[in-house]
Image 1 (cartoon, protein in one colour):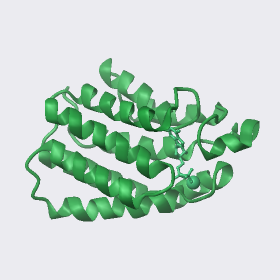
Image 2 (image 1 turned 90 degrees about the vertical axis):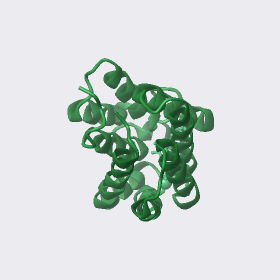
Image 3 (image 1 turned 180 degrees about the horizontal axis):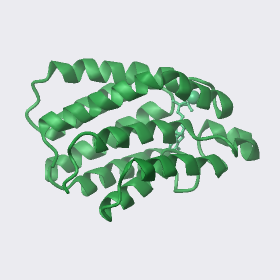
Image 4 (image 1 turned 135 degrees about the vertical axis):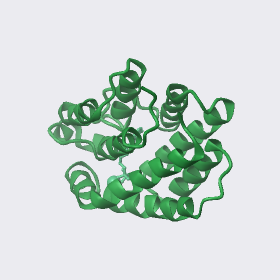
Length: 196
Ligand code: ADP
Ligand code: MG
């Protein structure tokens, strides 16, 4: 179950993973975008981490809302508003019911889709969020299912975002935003949040 403490730790762990994989994310974005996803995400998640470490939050909603605002203002690119919308959707839903993780994540996915208008199969972060939430609902979420979802973006043709400019040439490369979303869910798994 989500608590202020484990929600905070989850996002701090996400920031750590992004930082460790900054070069890799940039490499992926250099192949099908403009090569800034690693630096965008590292800058934004570092600002988020610094704020979360200060603590003083009273609700899960408060944690997600704070994270949302920092990602929105500090990540930049396409992914800043998308992660910002995800965390804002999650914050709103956590305000309704802190206990229902699936509903919270679905509200996050809805935030991404409202903002970016991408459907599954368009080689975006949606292609990780959607199957991961499905797997969680059926009690099958593990590191392998996350990695599989990330890997599946390799064979997709991008039809949204900057990578769509490449058309067929986007095929054969993993999507950077899907990859960073994979770290988001790995951090969730490691957070002792999901009930057995
Ligand atoms: P930019 O494309 O502006 O340089 P980033 O490099 O930070 O921004 O982020 C690129 C990532 O954003 C992509 O790999 C993809 O996962 C995600 N993305 C782009 N457009 C959309 C969209 N419309 N819906 C969902 N995700 C998107
Ligand atoms: Mg980019």
